[in-house]
Amino acid sequence: MLKANVTVTLKKSILDPQGSAVEKSLRSMGYPVEEVRIGKFMEVRLAEESRENAKEIISEICHKLLANPVIETYGFTIEE
Amino acid sequence: MLKANVTVTLKKSILDPQGSAVEKSLRSMGYPVEEVRIGKFMEVRLAEESRENAKEIISEICHKLLANPVIETYGFTIEE
Image 1 (cartoon, rainbow over the protein chains, first blue to last red):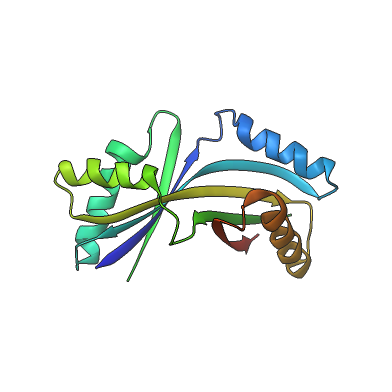
Image 2: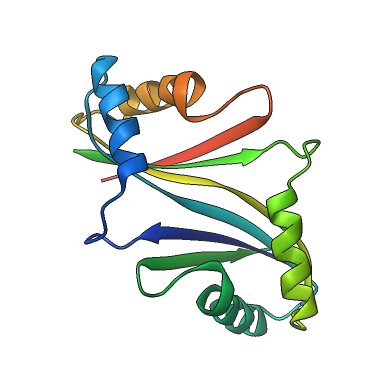
């Protein structure tokens, strides 16, 4: 069984009001924060032993379901 | 300037209905998925040069604002 750690973030050109709100809060609390961007994190456990297959499956899943390729980008790592 | 990649996930004992919904969708689409858990991912840029200070600041921020320690756990990595 393999585990994929997937991160989905808004593209740089897309406004992130949630991130801006957190950024402002942190700054008003006195933290030296320059920018905050918020995305999603997903742990996906696969019934699959081959890393190669796992990579293909996760790419397909990200593209089809977990991320919206119009406004988001994704990245993932595979671990045991 | 340093960047922290923060992940916030629900504790194992806390139900994750959003993850379960995605898990069921993926399984019904024929993917060999065993479990999906969904959390948050945050990129925080700090106006700070020292890794040690950055670690302290991010721990504090996570504990105070980004995660709810009652139901969530957090992890982070610091990069340039």
